[in-house]
Each structure stands twice: as C-alpha cells, then as structure tokens.
Length: 468
Ligand code: ADP
Image (cartoon, rainbow, N blue to C red; front, side, top):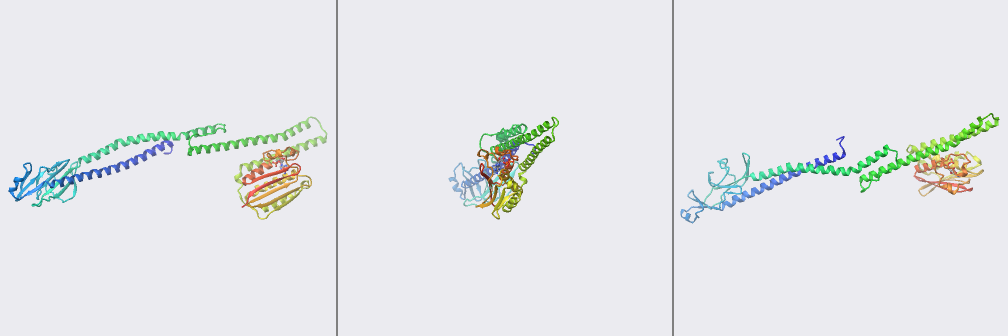
C-alpha cells in the first residue's frame, strides 16, 4: 500500500468494506429465506396430512357400505371396510400423502419414497428430513384417529426441490449481481474521491510552484466550503505569509544595515584619499586618523549591535523564561549603571521588593541597560534618571524617567523601528538598534511598553509585565 495514491486507497478500502457488508447481508438473507421457505413447506405438509385424516372412515358393518358414495375408495380391512373419500388428496402442491396399515403396507395414496422407506418404522408427530440422491425430503407421519380401528398411519412426503431451487436462485443472483454492483460502486467511489481530492492536488501544485519559484506573494486562496481541506489551505497561506514577512524583514534588514555601514565607510575612504593626495602636515595626518578612528568605532558599534540584534531575533527560543526576581535585578543593573556618572547625571533606583515575573534574566538586563544608557546619552548635564519598579494589581511596572532632551512627537512612533534615530539625536553616538531590541525583548515577555516624552523636558519609558 506504500506507493498507492490516496484515491486508490480510498477506492480499495471502499470496495473491500462493500464486499464484506454484501457478503454478510447475502448470508443473512439466504439464512432468513431458508427459514421462511422451509417453515412454509413444513406447515403445508402438516396441514395436508392432517386434512386427509378426515377423509378416512372405518365401516364395521358390511350393510352400511351402500351409504358410501361410488366415487369413494373402499377396501376390506380387518373385519370391516375402510372407505376413503375422493376428497383425499394424495398429491397436492408437491406434497404426497399415503395411508399405511399397521404393518407398514401402503393402502391408499402416493409416496415417491415408497421403496426407500419400506420397512421403516413410523415416528409419531415429528417432521424429519430425508436425503435421497440429490433431493432433500421432509417427512411427517401421524397415527390416524378413526373410530373403530387402530394402527393406521398417514405419511406425508414433501420433496424440497422448489425451496432448494429458490435458494439456489438467490445464490446465483448474488454471485452475478453483487460483483457488478460492487464494481459500479467502486468506480463511483474512485470518481468521487478524485473530485474530493482535487483541492489537495491544487494545493500541492501551487505550493510546489511557490517553493520552486520566487514569488512569495502568491496565495492558494481556496474557494468552496469551509471544510478541513479549506482550513489546510488557509494554514498553508498564513505559513507562506509568515515566510514572506520573514524574507521581507531579512531583506529590509540587509539593505538598512548596508546603508548604515556605507556612510562611515565612505567617510573613511574619502579621508584616506584626501590625506594620501599629497604630503601633509603632521596635524592633518592626526586629524585624519582621528576621523578614521571615529568612523571605525561607529562601524564597530553598528556591527556589534547588529550581531546582537540578529542573534536575538533568530533565536528567541534560546532564551527560556523562568522565575526572575525583577526587584533584585533592577537594583543590580541600576546600581551598576549609576557608576557611569556620564554628564554628572544622577541615577536613583526605587524598587518594591520581591516582585517576580516569568522572564529571561539576560534579556531583562539588556532591556534595562538599553533604556538607561539612552537616558544617559540623551540626558542633560547634571540631569537625573529615576528607575522605579512598582506592583499594580497583578502587574509589575518598570519605569525609567529622565529630564533629558526628549523626543519630538513625530519621532515617537518610529523610535522602535530598526536603525531609526530622531533628527535631534544624530549628533550623539548610537546605532538606532537599541530600542528595536528592547521592543523584541518586551514581545518575548508578552509585556507592553509605553513612552511619554516632551522635547527639552524629558522622557518616561514604562514596561508592564505580568507578575508571577
Ligand atoms: P540609538 O542608538 O540612536 O540610541 P535607539 O533605538 O536606542 O537608538 O533609540 C532610537 C531613537 O530614540 C534615538 O536615536 C533617540 O532619537 C530616541 N530616544 C531613545 N531614548 C531616548 C531618550 N531617553 N531621550 C530622548 N530620545 C531618546
């Protein structure tokens, strides 16, 4: 069955089940027909024998013979006579009835098994079966109840040829008709399963076209009822959609990254060409080297951030979530970052104790570091940074507030985009990847991030986690 198509498998299974069911039905039908036919025959045999009993009279007085009709059969028996009415039916509808004397001699009637049953003892009131050559017989015998004489027997014999022939006919019909019906039904099943599997062939064709082609914008978009096949097509469509999105993101990232790297690289090349153009003063060489170092460091920062970003983006599943004491983590990271003291900015940490969340320590440290280092980077001289962790109902709210340069309103909706840097920030160091990494970490934790900011007044970043 390994290499057989689903269509053929369905047809074969259907044909086998049909065959088994029809065999069972046929055997049942044959069995019931047998019972009905043989029972009818048996009842007919009984009634035919019993009816003939009334047609026998025993006459002891010879004078009374004159009262017997001419058409009746009379025979001397013992001291009297037996008179058998002409209504005695010795052969009727395949039932043979005969009257026997006590010693087993046939007195009147017919019996097709006369020779075979000669000398056999009579069995009172039972129907027995008898097989002679190819024919089955039913035999019924009973003592005759006629006043004045004892020991007479009636024997009914019925060959079951009609019933056997009828059963044989049923068998023959089944043998010829059933295979034809099964073949027709299987053909129909083959045709129908072909129709039912058509959408699957279409899905297969389109999926392989999409796999071997480059157009990830195509979709199966199966029409028709909302059945399992339709759901499968929808699942494949959304899978292709996800793939398309991932490829687009990848493409966008590569193009953004090349764009970001191109600027410092062009500056380095231009600076080198300028300085090597002719002999220069020592200060000029030093200036050029400083520019090259600055641009080189920028490229280095970009490459490091890009590596971090892509590593995290590709392997989110490599950062398993577990019970994290966010209170002590905030205290630790805040404490370490307070040591930076850039621009004489003070950093204050206020964290409610024992707040636990389901998270990843490494990612949460990076999230906090990125937000706090932005507050330093875009903060004012002698400014402040306030890191707070509070518990509100079932949520843990982590906030980082500064009184730095703030973010223009139109920039707010872009700050989480990759490589985005607000115009006012371009003079400071930075790669534009920090907050997109923060957003990714927030998503991995199924948390939410909100930003409030006013230019020249400061910014507030708030991350809300589900508490454990
Ligand atoms: P960058 O490397 O430029 O800091 P980020 O992704 O961390 O990149 O931030 C994106 C932009 O958001 C920054 O360039 C800056 O314009 C703005 N930004 C982020 N944090 C602050 C902040 N605390 N104060 C003012 N502007 C900020």
